[in-house]
Image 1 (tube, rainbow, N blue to C red):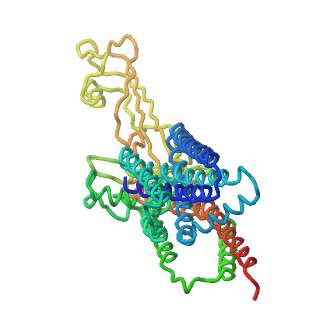
Image 2 (tube, rainbow, N blue to C red):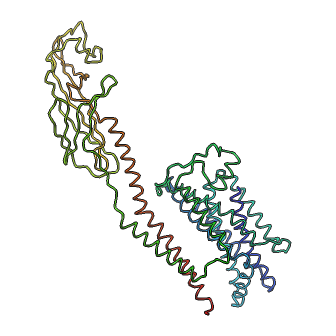
Image 3 (cartoon, rainbow, N blue to C red):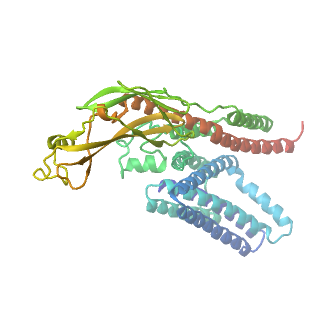
Length: 510
């Protein structure tokens, strides 16, 4: 509520001041005010439409795109509030003088639409900025009702103060007012930086620096006054992450330096022009270096996978699996090495499983089974379709043994493997009218499975994958996203450089 109140008060007062100064000038020069009010009304309606359109567009988008739009709107709001703070700090004391000069120039051109257009553009600028600020602040607000109430109160206060200034009953030190509110809005804008970075992460744009730095849930309990002031106004979340803290501290540091810089040490327009030009060039070079000179990270694992089997809650080593160029070599204890061809796999970031059937062979497979043997193989129960009185055994047995080998590949590396036994026995004889096919459990020595890669190997692989993913995320950010950010900032510095160059050309030559 406090954040939206100050934003609405400041933006509304800027617009009201401009309108009141133009109205006072028109009244002094005996000009009609109706065209100006038409321009103001049109600007207010258009600003409301912009805010409504942005809000409806955001709600109509899927969740990820909503987060992306909130990040973009938050970034635009930060730019707007930053330029507004700097501009008003420099021009607030001379605002009336500058506007009256512009109004005199417009009036001297004998254009009946010049001053109404001037009021329209001024109010439209403030209204559009307010719409963006409010939408960004509402996205980060904990209470929509409180944020709305703050905005309404701020606008009403702005209208009241502006009316008082217009009628001459209120005297306000504009320089001090905009300096104090500007200092507060610096913290609000820093909170918008945090909110924009959080939305950028949820949109999948910013994946680095997401480790939680602090846990402030105890300091900022939900619904408390502290949470409303610190999280709602200053934009500090209860679980700040590294990227958000760096953005918050960096923004505050830059603006603290700009606002506290002594006037007598302020650089000349010529020096500012060269400084911004150098910054623009350096950022452009940095963007090119990031985009062209970085090499992607590589991911390699040991090609020898230790295999274990579970026996009586204990793990027992049973062999190893070795990755080769076109397949894998399986070596189990006491058995010859078996080569298993694998189809070619792509270097995919997603884990892909490949199943390969392996035929088993039980050298000592019994040709006959008693009923007790069958029950032992069938989990201690009599299988369905066998009646001890009618089919007492023994039975002739025909065995079908196989293993289903499942290997998991990721980033072109073999990261896991397991074999699942499929043991089938067909019983006949002993009064059975037709053969009975049963799925039974056999020891791994008979089937050659089940087995899997060892848990220790799996843990090491998971850690290696997590480290590689972090490195890959950082590489992607440095090569693709950071250059875009640097180019945008470089263009901004270039614009400031051109503006200061124009100032240099307008200064009298010594």
